[in-house]
Length: 421
Image 1 (tube, rainbow, N blue to C red):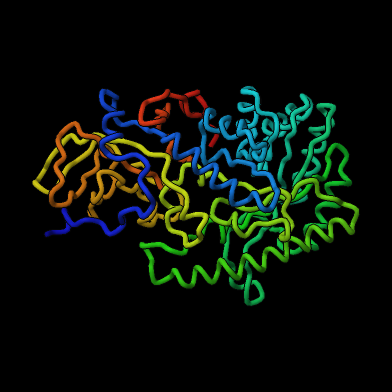
Image 2 (spheres, rainbow, N blue to C red):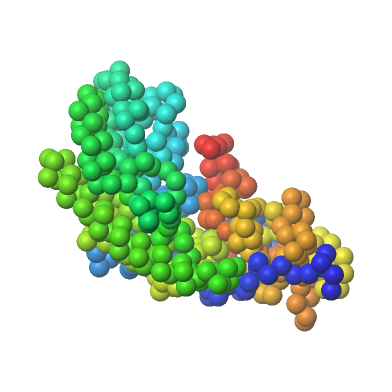
């Protein structure tokens, strides 16, 4: 078999249970125009319950990350959960917060520092309207402008500090984690918190302390199996180190008379290690509910208990050879390092594989099919995106499937005319 038809090793069969069979999905999508994105709402709801079960022993609320959803219906469905455990949202844009406020949501953690004046005005407007919006900052530079904007609007703006929870070893020469905030030591956090409290128009509210190198580091990856043991060690050691450091930050803030109202931490991949003992008062998750395929590759029981709930379907339009089909569309690649795991994953029928030479294409995607599988022109092929929220930027609406039937079609941010980044 030559390279042009060699199946890519980057599309392993998913190990998570299949909630809907290919036959059920095919019946649901009959007559629908493809490509389309859809959500198995039953699987989504089960993932919500599993996620809440993970954090329930710790008696802390969950704040959903909107970037991993980008569909108002799904966001509102979470906030309406009868347990009362899901409170507020973590959003990524001041304009997004304005938009969601117009849809009736009134509790926001703006997790990425705004800097443009229009965004600062948006934040102050929401605060003046009585919405609960907490803005994260990580440097002193923004404080005078944010404080002045708050005063100009006759209000006060709540501020949380975005803390770097990365693991630093060898005197800081080895950095394991993301590059975002310069605030790493407890002392630097207390110093900036004092500056916030001293700025007229601002109120210090707490911390956002997200551990990306734990939450986003899968340790059961089929793409780099030789690194999985090292990743497990990094996750374990880092969870211990950052938990102690985060708790120390909270202790020093209290000693300085700067009681944090919230300390946000966690992510879908680290909920089992993000506990009140590590200083948090709430946790965040987003990808857990749709379980994009990057979240298949974890050893932790709470991640392995989740099931795929978000998908897209493309149509077989060409049959170039007996063991190949070609689909229209499909090249929905995830952000981040351009590695094989950012490609969409063929989900159903089982056994389909992308080709090394082409992978998922701009307007068409060829697939190798296993022996014994017969696909015809017009048949749907089901994929999973690597990152849960990014798929919504490619579709105007999601089809909702519940109890094996199409329930509704709901707009994404894009379908509602919104594009924030």
